[in-house]
Length: 249
Length: 249
DNA sequence: TGTTTACATTGATCTGGATCAATACCCACA
DNA sequence: TGTGGGTATTGATCCAGATCAATGTAAACA
Image (tube, rainbow over all chains, first blue to last red; front, side, top):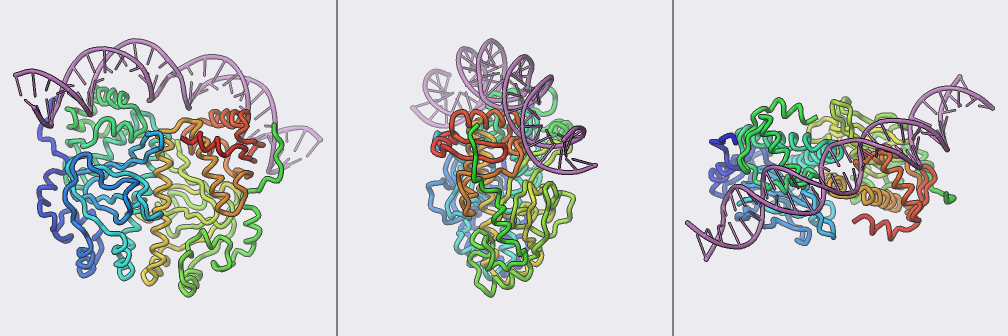
């Protein structure tokens, strides 16, 4: 097994830099990725006031579930989350993974009720946007509404791609696509696109991609044997991005 | 094969009732399902002004494609559409079917570019909402923005359910879910929930559900043999809704 | 009215990835 | 430093649904 060094832990550095959880939006290193983008500074100050900067969620803790009363949407501040939708018989589908700067819970707006469950994959923190106040604010701040719609639209278009992945891609293509998507998101956040630490289990990955854990495990082994990646448990190193891209279809 | 009578053609009656395509929103029979819901009458009048009521699209015609420049989102007025996302190698996934009152093209907002292709499944018409003007209007009309967000959120939550369907359901469960979803949408539009005419081909259904045409065809036959439905080509009659619901998982 | 072309059904066979089973590894906590 | 429980890997087998192949049906057009 190839040796892996200097692997960036999942947004840990960021979490450290953001140690002061009451840091105002304009001081936040996620600023560029987050809602405030495009807001004028006095608008931003108003938004700042309604945001609740909440304490940490520890690994496995629910941010919300379909049982929770709907009151807010969230932006990941540090760490990561997964969302799932479940059937009565217990089957569940991991519908998404969420990293710092990304919005969780937007599918709740329509029915004013969470339609999925969100769970922390590691020690994580969020900014809470109380939905009612957000809406009040939006009435006098069109730019904010535009930003929100933009976020919703982005997630929508990502979901369409996932539908293609689930419906039409082979196991191999699915995993290659997944790895590159994660890599891209790390890069957007200023981390290495090549070396990173997955916060989710093989089971979560498999579930999300519509595969069995065993298939994912075998693919990791094969990708490694073929020199596409190097793995050491949850640490991943992309070794041949070009070939991975070809594998995506 | 069971005989099928009095099957409601797909929103044809509606199309006829809406024969005057310049009908103002407040006169439109889709009012209740559409964007204007919750707007005050003077706001509505303003919205009315920017809506372009376009001519018909005939079967197979593109409403937009990923090549089209982005300028508007659409609301189906009569008929129906499918949207697809495609890979370079030609594979494509049908990401959704759209019926009167439903919004098409919202995933384009984020990147100001259509991320999918929309094609008419039959003779259809739409209301065109020029996005720039919609945004201008939204600035002075918070309720409009709220409505838009609500639509986006609704589609988002529908897509999450589709991800569950694609990732976790069996072929049988997929088809049962599909039939009931279509039935529900007909009912919402004031048509029979039991007897309707599908506007999409078996191929489109199969593609959308992540199945082969042959599998869908066999399932239709089996459902019919088991007395769950009666079919005559594209005409469908639900005979045992309860059992279909159980089959959804 | 026949011909064309696309769509749908049915049957036979094959296979990618699931499932079952066993072992190995990792780390949390005593 | 050992022990237990979750997580991961690896191998053997199976099967739901894909694919291949052929025929049937319908609607569109000359």
